Length: 198
Image (cartoon, rainbow, N blue to C red; front, side, top):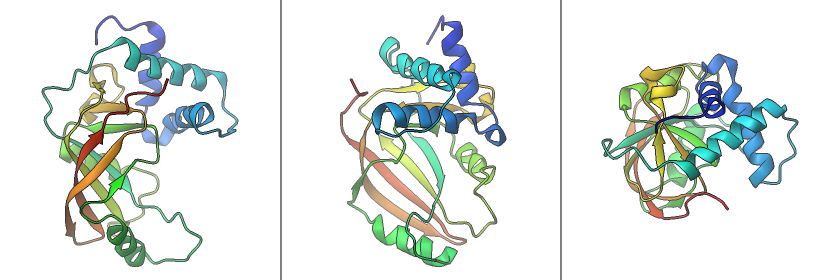
C-alpha cells in the first residue's frame, strides 16, 4: 500500500486511535448502517472514514504475505439475557465453539495483529477488560483466502502491527486450547472466499 490519499490516511488514523478514544466503534457503526440495516446515529466524519477504509480493499492488493499466521484477541461478552458468572460464560463460549464449528465474526470490519503478544496486550487495554478472570479468546488464523491489509505503517499505534479485515468471511475452528483464568486459544482457517460486499 503506497501513496494513500489524505482521506485514507486519516481513516486509518481514526481507526487505530487509542482504544480510550473509541473512534473505531463509531466507524463500525457506520459499517453496520450500510450493511446490516442498522440505524445508528453516526457523524459524517465516521461515515467518510468507513468509506475510505472500504475503498482500501478495492484499490490495494493483499500485502500480508510475510505473515503466515495472524491473531485476533477478543473479550467474551454475554450476549444473552441470562446472568452468568465469568466462569459460566467462559465455559458456555468454549462449549459453543468446539473443533469443527464454522462461524463468522460479529463485526464485518475488524483487526488482527501479526504478533501474538501484541494481540493479547491490546486485549488487556480494552475497556471491557475487568480483571485477569475476564473471559477472553485468542483466534489464531492459520490459513486465509481473501484479502487482508497490513496497515501498521500508517497507524497511530504501529507497535500493534495491525492487519485489517473486511467482509463476511467464514472460518472453521481446527483446534482449541484452554488455559487458566478464562482464556482460550482457537486455531482457525478461512474456508470460504466472500471478498468484500458489493
